[in-house]
Length: 379
Image (cartoon, rainbow, N blue to C red):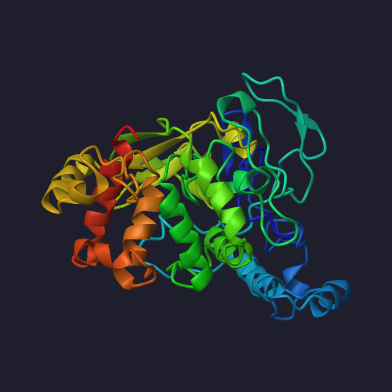
């Protein structure tokens, strides 16, 4: 199964230079170019125009398993292979980051890894086991229920793999830490009912959530909601206003420094990047992110929040009110995706109409400013 939540940005060689002690490269022309994350190693010259062709055993497996989940997965796989190459389908490509084509995976598999502040030693396999999230710091959170720590195989990946055991999440998904229990349950119901969708059909993490929403049972959803709603959010993202950012590539659905030593103008965009790429790739849930935002966007976002009366529903400190989620300190990439999805009607769940007036007249510059300001706040 393709890895959809993590492509290492470490130790590439040849073209893209270095990131810290790591090197970045694009695949050489003499190498078969992978079209997806985990071992789809077919040479494009032999594909005869087809992006993905399952082998006979895969087809036999799919035919024998007629459960709806496998139909969903069958539709998902071509999307994962295409995601690295297709152009963006939204005017906010930075928020729905799609993987840069030709990036090889240099992550060291089948060798022990450690992270600072932990006595745990973990060996990763390829493809990554989405039913076994690394738990480097078990003392930082209560015991995870099974649906968070191992999921249910097949059909429901462990919540803690993509969202991390402490629920803080990554730019390509959502932070679940401290969200209201009722809100989490309602969002899963919206995914299941097809009422919550992404404006970028090639964005693999959202496709995964759609499948999990279909397959997770109400009891599993409630256990996950009980767990994540009990956690205390922490400062996870540092917002920096700047005119320029390092040249980047997209790997694992997030931006990483291409290591070229050159900068580019930030424009009307936000770049959310790991503080420590290696630790992020090891899914260390103590290692957060930096969000580079345009100069003046934080102050503009604050004015927009005040003008739109966001605090009426989301609380005076924008940390939530009753079943309404907090916005303070959340990923700016995530916030921007949700504002745009709501605006164009791809989020139309039970509570979505409450946001219609707030988002209907937003310009792209407004979405950038709101995302920058909200992310800059303490959660």
